[in-house]
Length: 285
Image (cartoon, rainbow, N blue to C red):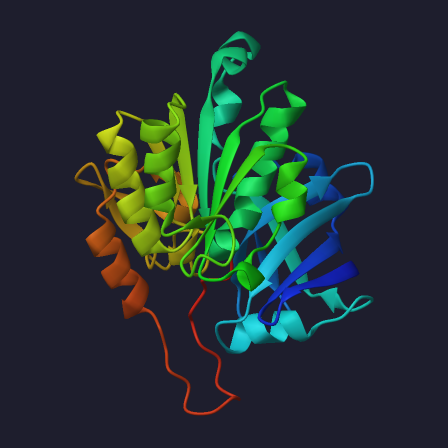
């Protein structure tokens, strides 16, 4: 059993939990994910690792309630335990492949939408620990939906955007990208985008306008996390990839986002009542 050592409510539908999982914490890297089950009869839920502490033996996950199974996770409290907490799984961020010399020269822009801010954090934190302070755009509909802003400010230059103008830039993250690059003259070498699929599609297009290589996370497509179910198939550069095995991060310029969005909708169930679990495994962006 894997005990929840702390729980924090980030918004009415989003919670952060630190889970005691020493082996996972000792091996985890930014960009990877875990598979959790609330109990022996529970659904397997893939969740991106949002932080990890090898010394304390804890792994941090952030879950958004979108259906029955994610609701069961968010109903757990400190002191409760997960039946399963398997990982780390998936390929780490490509940033970890860079040499120290390459890292020092790298100017990285992260674009995070909604709950996607949480999985951006470990990558930004890792860069900061290696002497690089990235820029991070965080977008939300309103200012009360922001998560991980204060944590992110400790490791990055943070730029906020809200659809309603309640805080920061008034508009979409693509508009703020334009302001930073075209109007303020900021220069970047690469861009990592994590958030809702539609946001990633247009943010990747915007980055392409400036010649920025992009990586996007397709973790929202994952179901069983092993590649066996085939639900996370996606076309990347005309080739079929499996998000949980080959990803979850891919070249944003090569991803067929329209196909990915169709697949994302295909595996949604609409439960007839609250006792029926769904397969809407979109628990962190």
